[in-house]
Image (cartoon, rainbow, N blue to C red; front, side, top):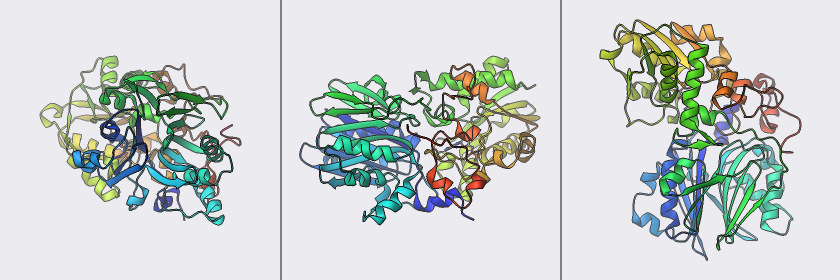
Length: 488
Ligand code: AMP
């Protein structure tokens, strides 16, 4: 049986971070700094492309930003006042340098580089058509489809070709592109993945999250609106285009739950405050008789603070995290992931012994982390362990660029909450409700007719067509609820 994650072999899924700057000396150095602040969005590979007014230069490598861009010599290879870069998330299959972004091509109109955060959900069917018509692909990345669509478009200007290409693309994309004329930043019509604009002096900066603006010393200007395309030329002239009309935006709510850094501001909301508020909602919805509120660090910390404040139960660090191990998910194989949970977290035995603990984490995906952490608390002598999760049960896969496994591996897709509690061996288990999550982002609740966010991982309500997945033999098992018309 094929599962969506067999698509891993084609590496069509990525969760990533993008950054670009135009109009500053040492653009590549600024880009590396910005990417460093976005490292949490992708730790597998990094690349930077620069332009010096005549030529494009590129350096890409496997590893963290600080490993690939270690010193002055690396930046000497990347001259120019315009640069953009990309950090890429791990995928479970092997990964070649050829998939590391930004991707670059010499088109009839000149050089074109592209850095993409998101996932194109009809990339495979588009690619099939393009290959039949003679396109020769150099990578297995979904992003390359856009390059070929731009290359083969019949429109006269690059901008028109780009828009023409994007009209054919479905799914999630926040893009930073460069041509000899300047930079183009663009967000898909639903704005599923974030993208913001900032300014340092006369230079314009684009980044996945505001934290990258803070770190490079840029002031936040505004977010790129869903469906908006912003062009900046070398004189600093900015023009905005809305080629896709104005559909109702559906930004990803999981960015608030887990993906973005807590010091970022997303869609006008502090990520930290939202996470804390989710914890408060959770405490109201799922109280527990306990002595201590303990976060699973770091992802559970803000929600645990909120839970503790709301419930009046003291917040304590009952688990200490090693900072020398990356995110659990980054490890491609299940075996490596298991070992990592232990290397990453250790119980603070002196604190938890004999205590009734409320453990807070942001999400349960496969259940590996929760199971290990509950066991760790018990081994350390905790009297009771009540698990509380700062998101609803994740029972659907994401096809928009957040790395979730196939549905059959999602614990919530396999069992109900009671069975999940038994599986992770917790005394009790509760998740915040979908309405509670929406309240935390300032909504009255989830408006079923017109949800404000993409929450497909929790509800199965996908806001775009999922052509590649709907065509699959096992599509019925994916149980996809997708609209007929998309990207209107
Ligand atoms: P699991 O052990 O499979 O249940 O994964 C749950 C843990 O992974 C939680 O502690 C989350 O903080 C983290 N997590 C959830 N979603 C993701 C994701 N898309 N990428 C990386 N980590 C994640």
